[in-house]
Picture (cartoon, rainbow, N blue to C red):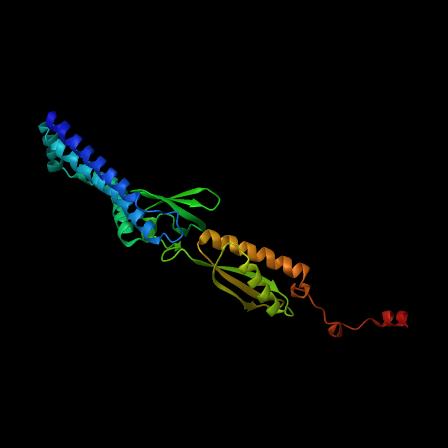
Length: 275
């Protein structure tokens, strides 16, 4: 009994020691800064590896402790020796857990996602809020949470907007008339972006992106320091460019045209009445 209790207590002590070391390590990094790619990488690795190591320590400690009890040891060995049913059932039951644990190690090493990454999963945009030993919590833009297994980020394609850098381009699309003064629109875009608090001072551009049978599609692009600022900047560009076209540049608004010369001639009765 004392040996069993000692082994369990030793396992719990090692788990607490790992937790303390991980907490000290996490306090060294600040993930609130915009240029926090390195910090988010280390925080993600520390949190995932902490949980994996703690689980492994407890499994080993409990396993060794059970071996000290002859009755349990002989019962387990006899079951495994007589039939492999227990091993098969245990293997099937632990398969999702082991798959997620291995996926967690892969995520910690390869870093496809990190804490506070801006990602698009299942058609929803959000930020990675928490990474556990089996699942990932993504906080969506409307404050909902979507829970995904770790294997999702290994087996399924997804978008990571901050994989290498937090800076992003904010493209805003507008439809304008063929007679729209592109130079005036470009000057107005630069004025809007330069006065915006969301712009990072790098990129601003306006180009004709596409042409339809009625309108021209223009793309207003500016850069921002992170995904949230890029979204706000895109909304600000759309709002102020629309107000400018409505109030000061109405020739840029899309219009329908009718060619009177190609209209069908009036009926003869209508011509006589007109005469």
